[in-house]
Length: 263
Image (cartoon, rainbow, N blue to C red; front, top):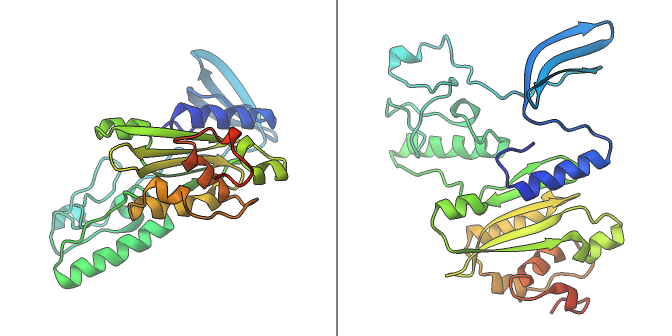
């Protein structure tokens, strides 16, 4: 599950789902689907062995394609990719300079808030002739599982590919007082910083309300706030946000050895 994420995120989420009684199978090749009475029967190969899986419902989540067939785009000289999405440059122009694309029709990331952002950017470029470029370096996203998976910026693979000398801080929710008080310590907060600048470059949060922790980190990445400034900023005790400060402290200290006030 979540195959584009790092193994520590996917493995932990899989364990939590299984603990709730969810059967998780990956590497599945579906061969056929049929209905037998009130059941849906899926014939598949799992780990190279044939299996039948039965249930009451089947949820299709096999991805999306651009709904662009029949629009006559070829006649205009507008290009699409293999999935039917418009090809655009960083300023959202198609191959025809006065025609722009924005939102789901150009493919990923396909969020409501990115569609609004792209629409505004495309309109500005269309009306002004500017070449304002998309910037998703601080794009927050959430997967609403239980616990939630939330992220912004780079993960370890992306940082390595970019040639950044980075450092990882990983804080278990068992070290966050609010999580202990709520009696739900599933998950962790992971921060990545650039060693040379002390600035955050990414975060991954696995937590019951991980989405509510995301924006402080997003702002820190967007505006280049050093980790040291996060450490020196007051965070109220017994709040979820205190976990961000504790994770920032973890770059240099073992928070298990600190007082309750995390100084």
